[in-house]
Image (cartoon, rainbow, N blue to C red; front, side):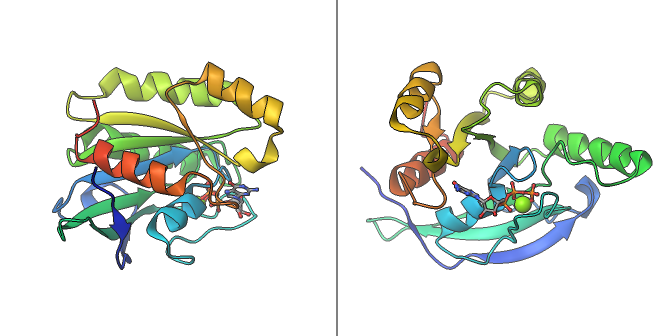
Length: 203
Ligand SMILES: Nc1nc2c(ncn2[C@@H]2O[C@H](COP(=O)(O)OP(=O)(O)OP(=O)(O)O)[C@@H](O)[C@H]2O)c(=O)[nH]1
Ligand SMILES: [Mg+2]
């Protein structure tokens, strides 16, 4: 089985809308989820680089479509490149309505029209698994998900649950993955699964 190790990753650019995005040279993985769920921290954990994507205790930290060039090696000495895309969290409202509407329009266009997106990673806070806003995201994405694209759910902040709550959540969401960005739980398994999904190697 191929195992992917992180090589050096780097920030490429921030875009406000699809027209400002870089040339689609590589397959892309986008990270979606409510503000403060741990998207930026999760990217840093996967890439094994603490300060690659900016994370913060204050919700609303990530405000643009941020592209990172990530590089991975496997046992065959192959080097694989992917764009990881860190997005602003939804559900964060500390901007004007006009600003928010424009943002939503830009983000929706990006998600629906950017052909190089191969994997949507939806991050959900383990403590709040059934929020309406997350259900809406699932139905929104599945409406336009193409055959060459995958959708993966990851529950973050798994460290905040007790053993009983962990077992329950795993049972209900049996296709999801569970991560503690703090304790680095399952990082190797999740990293491999995610990269293989982006490559279309997971059915
Ligand atoms: N306990 C715990 N804290 C976490 C975990 N993942 C992230 N955090 C913390 O949650 C806070 C938010 O993390 P970010 O990575 O900035 O969240 P984000 O989803 O990128 O937020 P926005 O950019 O505002 O959308 C930070 O204080 C992180 O340290 C986790 O698995 N467990
Ligand atoms: Mg962020």
